[in-house]
Image (cartoon, rainbow, N blue to C red; front, side):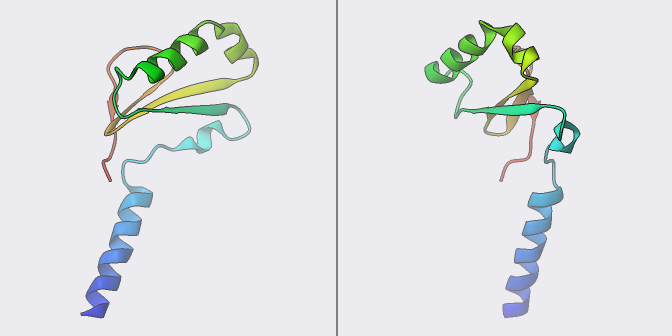
Length: 90
């Protein structure tokens, strides 16, 4: 029975590590990432943070900042309000 639990745990670790995770290595030594996390895209604090970043797009480019909007089950890259991409739910 313990072997089954260990096998299940290892399978879970691999699914979390290699599932639909984002490959952030493409940004290594190139960009700085800003992760805006929210429970819902209409959250007022989340929207206020997006507006602050939108006020200085030149500053974002100069600092090589890339904003990821992260919500449960979805994400967006950048400051657009377009369709969110689906991500794995844990």
